Amino acid sequence: IDIARLIDAINQKEIIFDIREMRSDFLATFIKSDIYDKKILSEMTNTRRNEPIIVTNFGGKNRIIDGNHRLKKCINEGCETCFVIVVSPVILEQFSEPLGY
Image 1: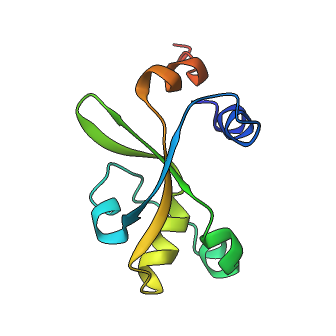
Image 2: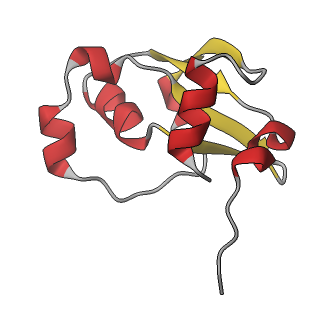
């Protein structure tokens, strides 16, 4: 996924998406990376932490597309909820990149 292009399209309101509040403990069950950069976490401001996390449901599984560190920071700081941007898999395909084998 070309995250930069996706975020730009969201900011420019070029795509249809849904924004909502979700429980942090529910978001923690989504497929995501388990690798965290401690420097990113320690330097993250509350403003950055509170930016929406981008999620989708693909292949019947909930997935975090962007915002893994923000979710970790929210959980570490006891935030009960986070805002998320839900992007459908059909829209997300526009931002997919071939693996290039």
